[in-house]
Image 1 (cartoon, rainbow, N blue to C red):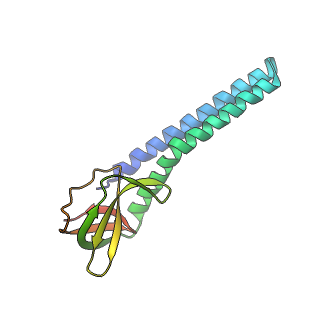
Image 2 (tube, rainbow, N blue to C red):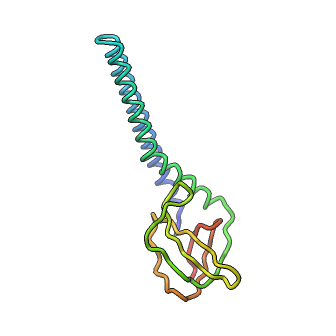
Image 3 (tube, rainbow, N blue to C red):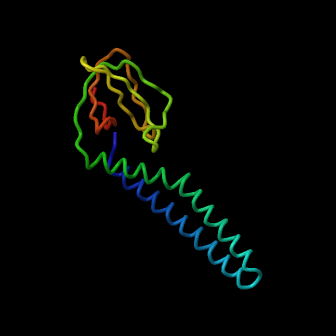
Length: 149
């Protein structure tokens, strides 16, 4: 399900977003300094505050989720992966926001002893599951890395 190219692509997106944030800040800083020196100090301060607020907005809405996904992928590639098997009892086809970071599909499996909630990355296509059929999953913590069967 995951390839090393996924990490490289997300890293490129993160670098691009950090470049945009830096350029926004630098642009607003230069404009505010010029306005503070030529027109009015308050106007320059106002423009700088708008630029900082815009940077915080862009970071929170765009860059922060990219950073969270990048860290998620790094953890998957460097973490310990185990195999879980169980009968699929329910699949939530609508992504949910989990761990205050990313969106996932929820898959409830019964391994004979206990029901487990596994999370599938919503950025990847949801595999077709037959309810009541036994599947094997490669998982990192409770995140599905690959569906084996």
